[in-house]
Image 1 (cartoon, rainbow, N blue to C red):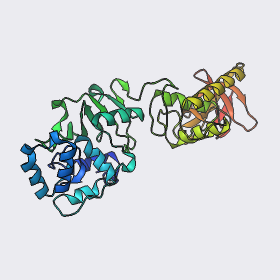
Image 2 (cartoon, helix red, strand yellow):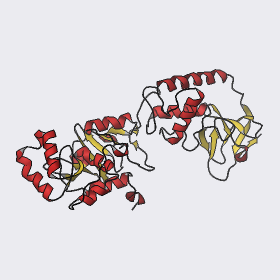
Image 3 (cartoon, one colour):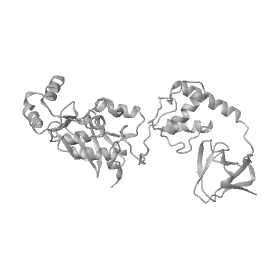
Image 4 (cartoon, helix red, strand yellow):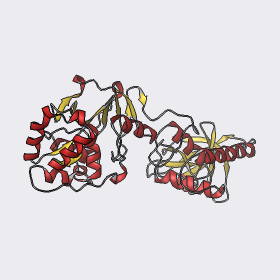
Length: 357
């Protein structure tokens, strides 16, 4: 079993929370709250259509059972607002109260539909059900309702007053979409489906990008930053806006004398496009390729970084393996070799390459 199941806010930990909540009641408008008379009175005033007299006996029984109650999206919000659900689980069937902080851990108070929109706006992976990845801890969505994948073709959902928190077969329910939950760490999980990448398909500059965004526009941003010499040495152009990309955006904003907030909005986009145009104009005459010479990769330590400039500070374009050979372009005073790769000029350290011919 993965150790991640014991780490709060991993997808495995969230799945374990959902499964431990099986059998607990459904109370509309609740987010892992302790069932009490005070809560019942408050929710009855807020949502009278959901707390009619015909249901009173059942709600009173939940109070006597000292249950912890949620609605469908309240399962996720309750997990986040209780710091990973531990106090909610410890309160089930006991006299303990649930320690909950409204809006904690970056989780907003949104309904099922609003949370789906929020996740997409944050650049999370999402798709229709025919592209559902085999990943636990994803949200399943249909209009007005949400559940959570737990593996083996099953989901946990707070299904409604008549059901409570139950485990259901995904194919037997009418889900229309799935999405990656913004508040969970999915580790090294990739979000590719049989139909291809499920990253947001968007043109660079068409939306605000920030830490947590994912998509083809993020990938375009990363490629432009690397072309301009900003280092993304760890992850490269992977389409995921993380700490490394934010650092590069901040560096660009600082150089362009913009507000330095690490977010890629319209002003930063305009400045980046201007900088890219200037770079292209300065690069109209590329050094000629010497077809008589080759740059051979000679590293014995795995794949070698090909960078957009002659030094470690420059961003990575791609990687090459030992034994590969590329058309030679030039050699810099520091011993780095320029080569042609995929129609572009890249640079490789002389420590891992040699010129032949």
